[in-house]
View 1 (cartoon, rainbow, N blue to C red):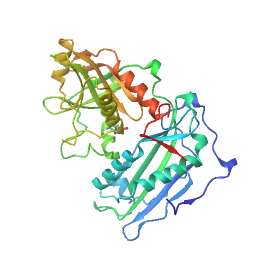
View 2: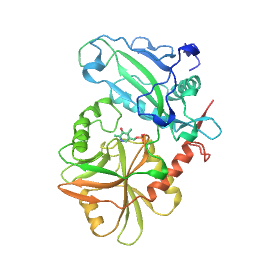
View 3: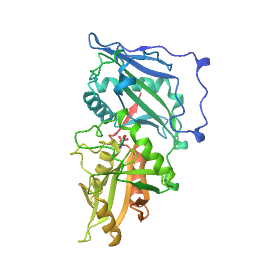
Length: 360
Ligand SMILES: *Cc1c(COP(=O)(O)O)cnc(C)c1O
């Protein structure tokens, strides 16, 4: 980070800002990006911040053929004091390095990349929306194999880049809409020994068809099941939580365990578990959850909530699940709205917290 080379655009060449109340996810890109090259022979080149530009790459580049690519999704938030904050960026860097190891792409120093991302945020700080908009800055670190040879082998060349742009609120606390899920065991997102626990581009292209079918059938998202016993694993690109009352009357917040490699280890997932634990009001457990249990809990009136959790929406309450011709109705959100408010208060710096890392 101390070697960083910066080339910025003159003020008059910078793009106009979009209207903060009309942001479409992934449609807006700030003026500058981070770009760092790596070769097996020489290691990491000097990191650069340069104007956003198109890449020129040989058609043989490994990423085009074998999807040797991984990414991260994280956000920066502007607080009421106008300062910009990252949320637990060390967790994203840790996961990104694990994804790199899974794809035989080079390791790097996560703290150094955080420093360079802070610089990028300061250079493009006018792209970070003000707090009143409920919007934020979505940051997309990416690493890919660029060696221009066709063999199925680890790439001897790589490029790490970071682009970012403002995104609107998924929904504000006052108007959260529970979503409808399609649970179809015909589609499987991840399996033991696979790569579903890493954020690899190759995990997502095969999910598009299932998502398309969910939309066609009048649902908004896919509930990913695994195994003959129909284990609930994830919701779209979110982790899943189930809140219920046990037979003895105590309450339990459950989410599937990370042990089998079926679950992406979400930063939001860890954070919600820690927040919920701090309440001391109910148990937080990592365990397998099956469709039969969901049906039994509904029949016995003990299901309280199901919700998804991820950086984009923080929490997304579930309203119903279409499964084997039935429609399972999930009770309205309460705990998830409380968690949404408390986590976003930390992210925007409304509540001081060590998870929130001030930029500059
Ligand atoms: C990114 C992602 C999540 C959520 O992770 P966060 O770090 O909380 O944003 C969950 N599941 C999948 C499949 C993902 O790709």
